[in-house]
Length: 507
Image (cartoon, rainbow, N blue to C red; front, side, top):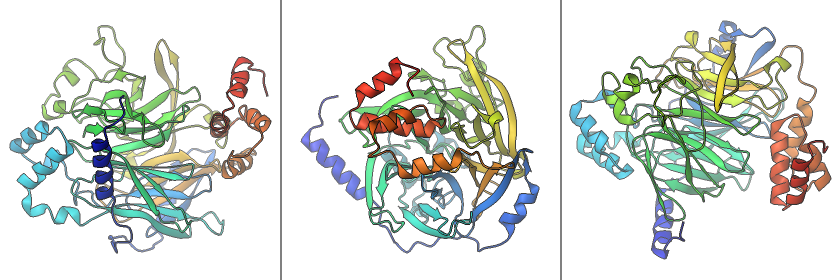
């Protein structure tokens, strides 16, 4: 890409400055007070016999959690929504004139013009509620959160979507809230972001269906930031001055941590909520069905692939080619040759997703993905463990088993302590003013390696001698290996990395 012109640099800087919301605005959303509901809910969960569940946090410390991230210090950053149905609307509520205007949108500006045309009386109402990030900590170390701060709020412009993705990496907190990808930082350690930067804007061309937002933040083995967008689409000007124009489909994108080098990794998705890499750098997601007789899909995201979905299919009663040509089916003879088919049809509402890091879980869970299936009712939802193996140019699903049922999970991850953490929406599709975080641990005691992993992640890799970093490249935990790899790369120790790659017996 050519260097951007001075006028473009100025325009991007002005746009970013204008987009940065005010912190400490006095916004006070509706959140229910403390109760015993979180503890009482434990009795309704069905949990794998080898595991135990405990409550880590509950309302009013958090509410309406869409996604979260537990950092190396055991702090939980939670993306909370308060604009759901109160500023973020849905195509299913309106008629044919609306749909025609909706499909014609080619930019975020077009979408906002559509709102002003159809709902001038709603504009004030639709900018009252905020999305935000809450930061929760367990200061006394008793296994229960005891302090919460509003890390960042003020996301309430008409164009803002749902706060649907959050990730802490090397002191920065990345946050996805249509139309922007944000990078935030808390310099003074008070639990409140005091630096905010828009890395890109232009996501969310369409209104689409609720929840088809930006999510899936994860750092790949190449050190780049990966994230997903549903079929609300995008038209984004990159930092280098180019344009990425995918207005009618969902996609997975990646960029450098500073936002440069933005590119499309995989396209043709409907609503890929979370992303997870396996131990070999293969990327996967769960993509939602269209309620048109099709089934949700577990997808291997090959670079340059296209899963075939376009937003216009949603407006057709039979979903058009999506159903007629069986685009959502796993591989079969005669399938469209351009298509990257799913690994399997699995779940109904895939949301959170993570991969076993190599320590923490019981050994029989090694090499498994953990997938949240959010179905709007806790009695029909839960977290499931999936195992895939290579098959031809792709993968096949060879095993699945429930981890926990009876909970309505929005996100899941393995924390630095080796426990499985999950966020609980509690019940239904609407805002509840409630929210919980649960921890799932092994009944027979913690993995003896978990304490070392937690210490290594907490201390970080900066300043460690090169021989120590090389040794950690063989650690059982992928997060430790990756952190050591990044530290060697940052130090310019290409020779050490090459030596390990050339000699698999290096320790």
